[in-house]
Image (cartoon, rainbow, N blue to C red):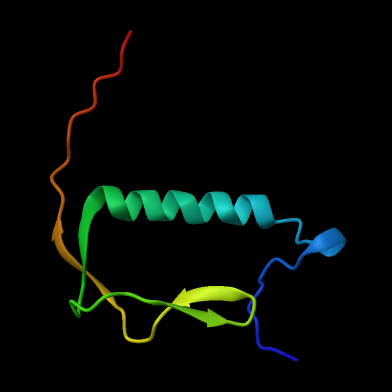
Length: 78
């Protein structure tokens, strides 16, 4: 048996909190990307590695916040 990480299960027994958890993940990612500039620590290419049923980045690829973005004013149309 493999060692796949499927946190929400699948099929008929899928987790009831799947949609809410994915919404939270999208909000956190959008907030981080809106406020920080990210860069790879090492400048080598990121290669996908097959891990069971899923693909993941190769080992040793770390992101670091290079600087904080300046807030931009948003104009909402009336």
